[in-house]
Each structure stands twice: as C-alpha cells, then as structure tokens.
Image (cartoon, rainbow, N blue to C red; front, top):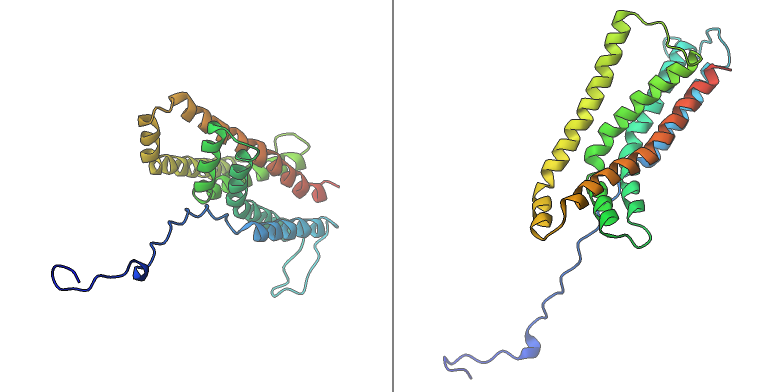
Amino acid sequence: MGADGALPVPVSAIPPTPAPTPAAADPAPSGLPWAVAAVAAGLGMESYAGVTETTIRTALPGGLATGPVGVLVGWSLTALGLVLAAPALTHLCGRLLQAVRPGALRLLAGRVLMAEATRIGRPLGVVCAVASAVFATTTLHGGHRPPAGPLTVLGGLVVAGCSVATLLTAAAEARQSRAGTTEALLRLGAPVTLLRGAAALRTGALLALLGPLTLLIADLAALPLVR
C-alpha cells in the first residue's frame, strides 16, 4: 500500500506503449488505367475515322459523322489520356530515381517527385497534350507549317501560353510548399548545389520519360490520317 493509502498497480497490469508506426509511403495516383483506356479509345476512334475520306454516318443520336468528328473525338480522348497519365508517370519517375541504391541526390529528387506527383502532374499532362497536338498537326502537313489565319494563331498561342503558365504556377506552389524542408536541409549543412542538382535531375527525368511518350502518342494519332 502506498503512502496515500492507494494500492500499488502491478507492472504487468500496465498496458504496453504501442511502438510508433513508420510513415506510410506516398500513394501512387490511380488514374493510369483510365489513361491507358482513354488513349486506346482515342487512337481507335482516329483509326476508324481515317479509313475513308467520305462521311460515314453512325447510329449515334443525331447522326454524328465519324470523319472529322471522329478525328476530333479521338484527339480529345488521347489528350485526356495524357492528362490522366501524367501524375502516375511522375510518381513512377520518382520511384525509378530512387531505385538501385540511390545517393542523396537521387533520393531527394525522387522523394520530391513522388510527393508532388499530383500537384505538378496534371499541368504537365496538359502541356504534353498540347505538344502532342502540335506535333500531330505538323505531321499531317508533311512537316510544313500549316496555313493558319490570325485567329488560329491567336487561339494556339492562348492555349499553349495558358498551359505553360499553369505548369509554372504549379511548380511555384510546389516549391513554396516545401520551403520549410529546404530551409531545414540548409540548416543541417546541405550544399546549395545539392538542391539545384536535384531540381535539374527532376526536370531531366521528366523530360526523358514524358518527352518520347508524347511524341509516340502524337505519331500514332497522326498515323491513321496520313495513310
């Protein structure tokens, strides 16, 4: 019995303190299957629209034509697929950077890409979709600049400018969100060259992964229409 008259609590009756669980890894964006389906449907629609140059009527309500309308719908689906796939591909790029015994540079670059996959992935997908449309249009005209009026040029510049501005805004927001982490790394003695190298590595990895993919989808999108 204790000094205050209370019975002592046996040590065995005290519940053990649960061990701290490690932080969960960043979940991968789940839009990749839908992106693959959208790209496949878009390429299939464009292939069907490019079978004949004449207008083919379908059983859809209103008798939509599968010629020019099919091309427009197909390009829209492939663009949607790129937008949906970009966050998942950005997350995958971060994982690949951290594969096979990464050093501090690759580890930092990969973790940032995984953490910011959704924030910067979607604007990056929009930029890829616009670039794919431009490349496909150039391919359709045999590599020459297609005839375009002032309104067409203005519309293209507005679309491209808005997509690039959205991507830059998302990148600035991502940089601002990890400002505390950057300051902590600098206080711990991390060199500034490490942070700059990680940013360059992230940019190069995204270009290496999404650049060829964008050109491939643009080439496949234009292929049925140039046969």
